[in-house]
Length: 490
Ligand SMILES: Nc1nc2c(ncn2[C@@H]2O[C@H](COP(=O)(O)OP(=O)(O)OP(=O)(O)O)[C@@H](O)[C@H]2O)c(=O)[nH]1
Ligand SMILES: [Mg+2]
View 1: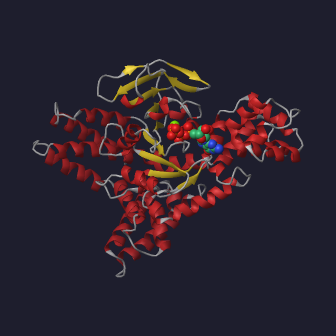
View 2 (view 1 turned 180 degrees about the vertical axis):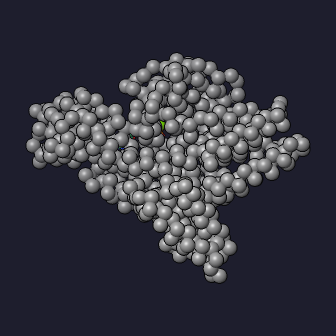
View 3 (view 1 turned 90 degrees about the horizontal axis):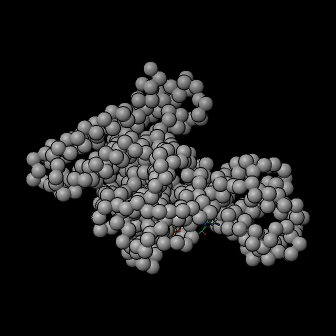
């Protein structure tokens, strides 16, 4: 199915290449093709210091993106897998890209801009051989409410699909609280031509989740409750699929934990619990603990930078209880507690498994825009018709559109029906068991029986005289999804 979709889109791009040869803006077609063949592009967006670069590093499993200060945090930076280590700078004025020198500072790639003003840079493109980048190309974007207008604008340009030079297929939007400016940014990303605000290609991350409960040991549980509440907020549901709490710093540190750090933590865990608890009441208290406490204050400060108070508390608890005995075991437990695994699972089920649809959608939008910009081109009308056909004929697009319709409140029905419909359409993942609300170990027999039951349920709903036209249509799309599930059993 998805191979067919990619193949049809390739052919459409070929036709567009011929039709728009030499036309201004047609370079976008080459870019669209590269994108269709490459990994899914996920942009990490959000306000200043939301923890974007830190989370990017956690997802890659390496400390690549500089965090905190430095002029490069103000530049849109792409990280993709490749055979060599290379940094290219694309100037904003459209002149040729230049290769830049870089060095690594504590792991992070520090790029030498050679005196250039960050505002003059369109983007940095970093090629980095890394397993973490094989399935996803990640894009770090600058915080959007920076003082310098140019920088904020860059991020907006980037997220606004009307400027298709560099947009992403999907977005992780990091936020600490629901804020009206957060909603504005998300809305800017969502294009209007496939279906209005489209929540299917965005996930919200409640970032720096460990700080929500003040670093207390139950901070993640508090963050989860807040995320659940946000997830039910109708304004957010119109914009994103889900809201997940993630403690990015803890995830990054767990993924890059060193033996030296583990050794330091073991030393600290030997301090009597009561005493350590008082030091851990505040960052200052921890750094300036009594002189006979293990480690120098500088070392404790380094630990704090890497783990945060929450991470140190968690590590102390795990080490004292002998739940972990090595750096590998500690890393595994901390990763679990950071929320990273849930985020990776959601990324896989919602984005990676749907990559073909999201990528073809981006490519088709590029062709569509060229046609609209060149209405007198003899090929435009026909290409537009073809695009419409691909979109209408490809069932996954219908699924996305219906999920968006449910999310944006355009389809009215009982809440249970809507939740189950969304699930059938793939909101929790596209594997048969996910669509059917079963577990991964469900037998084929169970899957088949449940699928037939669901088909019956959606048929009754589609034909019900009480169902609105939109609801019937959504139920029909769900039936088609289930028919494909059943057909897959052979
Ligand atoms: N406690 C805690 N601190 C975090 C977390 N994520 C990031 N930080 C800290 O917050 C600061 C900013 O993190 P970055 O990852 O640079 O944030 P950013 O959104 O990329 O920032 P800009 O690019 O400058 O907008 C750093 O000091 C991080 O160590 C987190 O999950 N928990
Ligand atoms: Mg950053």
